[in-house]
Length: 401
Image: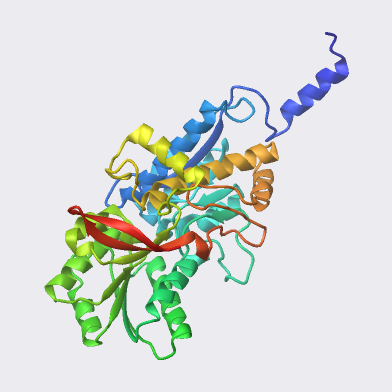
C-alpha cells in the first residue's frame, strides 16, 4: 500500500495534538488522595478498592483505544485536610494525570476544592457531602466547572431524614463539629420545621473521636426528645449509642449515612437494633440493578466476603455502595468521558461529563450531569433502612425506596 506525504504529515500532526487518543503504549493516568490508613480508612481504602476494580475491568476489556488505564498516584491523607492538600499538590504536579477522584470526607475535599478548580482537570466526588464543595457560592449559583459529585449530599439526605423526623414533636440532633455535621444539622433542622412548625429541635455538637457524649445526651434527655438523629461517622455513633444505654435513653433513633457502616454496627453491637438510617437504595433492592450486581460480583471475586462486603455472599453490606462502589463509579465516569470525548484533555473531558445522561452506575441507577447541575444523586436514589436483630446478628432492611 502506497502512503503519500500528505498521509504522513496528517499522521504526524495527529500524534502531536495533546489529548487525542491513539493506539499506543502510554497509559491513561488517574490519581487521588484518600484515607487509606488510620481510624477512618474504611472510607479511603474502600474507594481505593472500587477504583482498582474499575481500572482492572477496563484494562481487561482492552483499555481505551488500546491504551491501558493506570492509578498512577494514590496517596494516603488519613482524612487530615492538610495532608490532603500536600498530596494533591504532588498529584497536580504530575501533568500526566488526566483525571482525579476527590478525597474521602468533606474536610479534605473542601481543603482541596479551590486548588483543583484552578487547575481545571476533572474531578469526581464519591463521598463528601457538604454542598459548598460543588456549589461554593450557593445552590442557586453555578457549580465548580470541573468538580462533579455522586455522593449522598447533605441537602438530599436532610430531606429524607426530615420526612421521617417531622412526625415527632420533640427531636434531638447530635452532630459532629465538622463542616459536614454543622451543615447537615442546620439543613435538617430547617426542613423539619418547614414540615412541622410546632416541632421543637434540640441541637448538640461533639468532636470526632470523642469517647464520651454524656453531657450532650443529658441535654437532649432533659428536652424530652421523642426521637434523636445522629449526624456523623459510625464509630462516634457507636459511642453515642452506648452512652444512651447507660442513661437509659430510648427515643426513636435515626442516623445519617454513617450509621449503616461497619464501625457503628460492630461498635454498638446488639444496641444497634432499632436504629433507622438513610443510605443508597440500590444495594437494598432485590434484585439489584445490573451494574450494582456486577460490581458486587467483581468485588467478591477480587476481595472475598471481607469487612467491606460482609459475610453473606448473596447480600453485600448496604455500606458497600458508599464506601467502595462510589469509587468504582467515579473512575468509570472519568473513563466514560474519555471514550465519548475521544480525548484526555481537561476541557474535552469536562465537556463530556457535562453531557452525561442516564449513565448506569452501581450506586445510582441513572447518573446525569449538565453544566448547571453537577450533583447526580436524587431523593429517589435514597432509602430508609431499619436495623434488625436476626439469627444472632444485626441486619439492615429497606423500609422504603
